[in-house]
Length: 566
Ligand code: DON
View 1 (cartoon, helix red, strand yellow):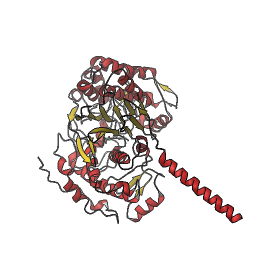
View 2 (cartoon, protein in one colour):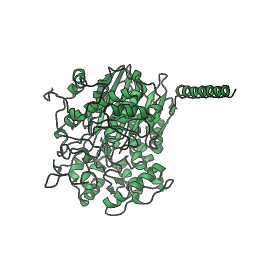
View 3 (tube, protein in one colour):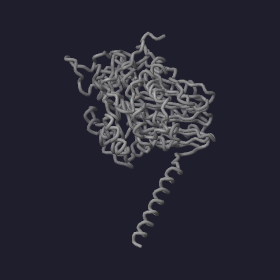
View 4 (cartoon, protein in one colour):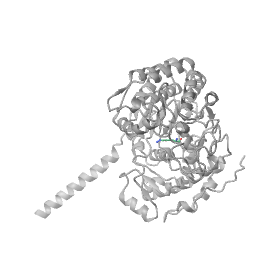
């Protein structure tokens, strides 16, 4: 009798467990669903302002200007006037393009500017303070995009952002932690104490009147205010007084550049992503095309074999990245060869499921060079069917930590994305070579990967993320999550992520999110697993177009990200 009861209980237990499993499968977690238009960004305030611009008849490019500038107010960690970024677009008629508003090296920059007399890297010179600052591109970028495609008057776009700066932003818990973490750096870097060095707590309101004044001047005088006007004079003087080398001439000569995006096919998808000076599009094309012939959905999401094949493709692509990629206006990039089927097949030919290929045996591939590179991402799809994907950054959190109190914004430390010394890793552990050496007016190589995906000729997704070197692999895992594993946009951005970048020779994994057995079997095959380095990998935001035309926002809960739309 007793034994029978136990057997019945055990049986019931099995039924409950299996129902739970089925439920998990049957009820997909969806993000915000809207009919017509959507903005997903790192802060609810910025998504809301972007949505309002769309609701009053503006298009994605008007909303881009509003969202980008609102992030500078609400998310000073990465949103910026003192940084730069990239935008990839797809118009409702299928036309595609890309805008590069990446920072550039000042005219007085030199190849060895971060080395001492013995040729060693001077600690922090390229990461903190005025010498780390590249000539900012954001103001030029948002004006250039709006001028070409926008439809609303500038005033109606920037006014709500100015109001936000005046009314103040409410500090979130995550923001409080970041302010606390960086306070020492703020005090060490700036001559005087700064607004953000106060002991801000969650729910406090931060009013930014100086930033509001700068935005008002930009609204009135256009981008020239920032690059040639009073603000330019104040900014150049401020940077020089703090030991930097950016001049008024550097600011006056800054231009955002239209670029041709990288496009490639993966199964029935067409992927449109950022071209150099970002490494994102090329590296993602290399990785996805290298794994296309494997049946990834059959291997299983985050299974040993899935992680292996992706990590091996990543290892090889990042080795190429470090050798071949840089600013295309300064170096020749063998772009089509690097993403050709024959080349990639050859790169993967020594891959085996039996054991890891050590990075010490992997170098960049052989390519004939004479053939004819803390951040934030937002995605917007407007009610007209235009889509944009924008990633913008100050590089590290709060950039160089240098804050121009008079103008009300932080300055980037993007100069660290150059290769200061061949073979010596930057803050993301990325190794660079001659292709990414410093030269006056050159743009530093980036990993930012704003991406748009089409399926059967129709818009499917706009996606991107921050995360330094892990950006590329986070974006491609999100695309695979939707395409190979049928996840919703929200599930795809939330799923656990891993990353390999050739050097260091390790697979970084988000801690405690991967099966222990999987980790053990990877280790057995010779992979080094690092669950410590990155508590989170990427903060992905995206919008997915469902077959019925509705839009689903995926706002990553790793940040304070939020979707808004109608
Ligand atoms: O352009 C790049 O690749 C880097 N400056 C991006 C920095 C970044 O994503 C930091 N975020 N966590």
